[in-house]
Length: 156
Image 1 (cartoon, rainbow, N blue to C red):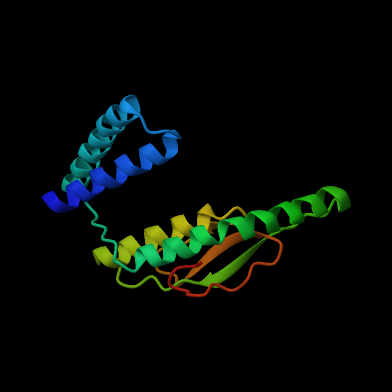
Image 2 (image 1 turned 90 degrees about the horizontal axis):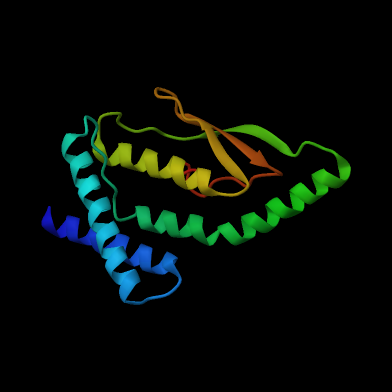
């Protein structure tokens, strides 16, 4: 528990310093305080949560793949929106994709589902409209022609 809490604090501090744009004494102190408050909030939520989530080590691989795809997806989105502005067409559409839910009460599966929906919704050219319990599919809104997901368990 202490090691995980320390890793969360360190990760939040690093993220704060990265997003601050510069590293100085004031940023370091502010980052340490903000990371401490966010870590305390996360620990409190984790203790009192009715539903447990757990993220596997493979989550970072899928997050990296989703983040690496942001630049090409942004370029595709720009092209599609520019073409839509010129032609007046509506480029968006909804598509169903297979999305195996796994065990509903298993923390690792709940964490995978939450991360998969978040990562799929961070893309500039698509977002998850619905991933209903009990159905092994997700409804995704996309601009242009979305490629198939490389892993249906992750939607990205």
